[in-house]
Amino acid sequence: MKILEVKKEENSRIDSFLAKKEDGLSRVAVQRLIEEEKILVNGKKTKASYKVQEKDKISIQEEKPKEIELKAQDIPVEIIYEDNDMIVVNKPKGMVVHPANGNLDGTLVNAIMAICKDTLSGIGGEIRPGIVHRIDKDTSGILMIAKNDKAHINLSEQIKKHEVKKVYLAMVRGIVKENEATINMPIGRSTKDRKKMAVTKNGKQAITHFKVINRYPKHNCTLLEVKIETGRTHQIRVHLSQIGYPIIGDTTYSNGKNEWDIQGQCLHAKSLAFIHPITQKEMFLEAKLPTYFQDLLNQLEED
Image: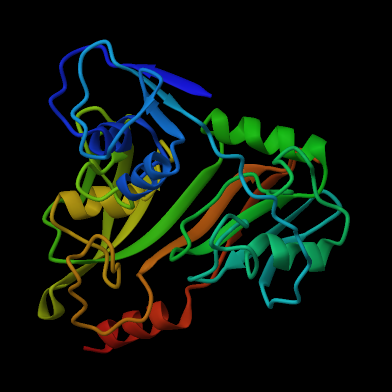
């Protein structure tokens, strides 16, 4: 049971109030919990339209996550590198990294379990074996997975200390004027759409660096190399859209515009530079572009 106390006069509906306060709770979810009497105000049942008052005590009966049965699945995934301690793959667009409610199978974890059998680290938890870091479902590219706990701990520490150098390629709509720039804008859950992230005053610090690789004035687009200092959800997509250069093919942050009819967003985790967690050897690995991204690039270069 979780209890929240309203600190000041909010003058907002309880469903809106909780959706803003609680990550992972949408207004629809709050309304359902109210109907099931799993959300009470001052110990009494309430309605979604109730306007919260100062000093109200709101109790939320937290739902236990449904148990997810992990199973190995023979799903093709390109292996870039593999040894006894780790495996590095090129994740295709459209593939979720690990199972969750709504995506119980067909994930990268399901595919890796079939490849690595029982040789994945357990630190990531029951549904994230071996997973050290993630990229969005619709972002393609390079990902490293740990096969044992020692490798997992070491790689996680490198990421935490910003010692892993990851480079992305992004094709954006518009001609970017600056040759290089840094975007430093906080990112948090959107107050208008809880499924989206947004630049918001109360968000967490997010820093993105980019430089122009090529401009295509005839087609009004620019190819960027992007590096991030922080790893916020949808960070690159949100930041580039915020400054007026949405990623081509991004259905969430480009206002639905897709003049090129790309079936996938043009954001790709291209390379990783890190120290091998066991041998301490310097590693540099690259993942080739997905076909739809490469085809667009070829077309732009020809024109």
